[in-house]
Image: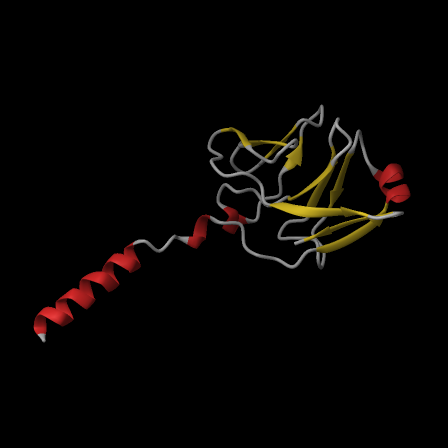
Amino acid sequence: MQLRFLAISIIFLSLMSCRKDSSDRIPEAYVSYRITLQEFGIKNQNGLLLVNKQENAGVAGLIIYRRADGAYVAYDRCSSVNPQQRCAVVPDDPNLTATDPCSGAKFSLYDGSPVKAPAKRPLKEYRVIITNFDLTVVN
């Protein structure tokens, strides 16, 4: 009986030690942001549109980027470095990277990947749906 209890305890402790720490992850937030393609064309700056934090627009707002190949990508502005601070990344000039003003980390706007330390994780990417006249960002 004691051997059985010991075996179960070891298995339980092993599983608990494999648990990932979620404090270094960008929190989940409901995203449902819609803009017309015409409005995007008017408001964007060199293919980039910043959406400030608002309801249904991620943890720290959104970056919607039209890449050189014509594809649209959208990221949460919340930096993946110390995401509990909810520090919003700011696009650099030219719009190829974005910088976390709190840590100095840089991220590629092409795919959200980290390009300068201390960033190790990419920006959180959201799905972009293009219909006849609308661009919609969802998760």
